[in-house]
Image 1 (tube, rainbow, N blue to C red):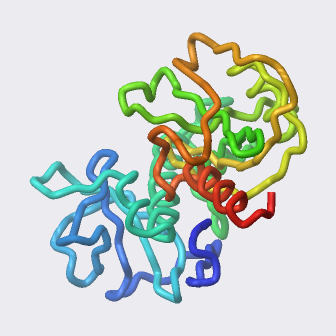
Image 2 (cartoon, one colour):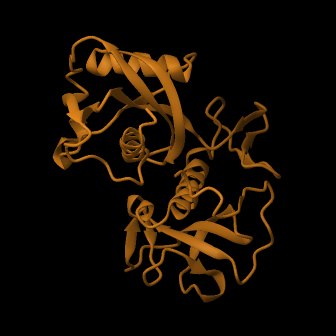
Length: 271
């Protein structure tokens, strides 16, 4: 965590290399990846599908990766983007970037200010409106996600939208305009469960493309107050012993990673 740093070389150059037969392709039908056997990677020279809206994604270990949508609906086997995360964090990062680039191109064909068509800007991932001189980059929405700790206990909550999964997780929310990440932690915690926190410690980040978040992960110590639920957001919340946790998100998500990392640190006696 996160993205298997040091295990791979990932480059995101502004200019796409010339297409080559050995290029890797990530193809989409709707919001799902088209499988090639048990892999979601296709080689350009072997791919039997017709595609359009091709985008350069980046270089992984020196190999060029592109993404595109199928030209027409076909009977294919697909894989949800979330499932890729359980296979490889690096693959998930590339697939998330691919999905974000395709969505961004589709959503920014016209200028949001004057309505004129936009065009691609050479050398960088940007759409530009000539009359307005505005540039539109792939959208990234910063969010905080925080594990509240009290010694050997952690405060976990079940979101209204996630009640059907039965998961209890860390608290999270979007950073508001003009707000720092640390301010957002205090505000979101106060709004969602009514308690105060202190001693914020940044742990790591993860892209989460549902639809386009960048999650900034923290630990924070409990500093007082009783749990009061934000009814439209939180179905339940409570303190749980690290030795008796409810069902929590898998470890490939930053929520699960924050929990596992804290449990390991407690066992090692470093927190």
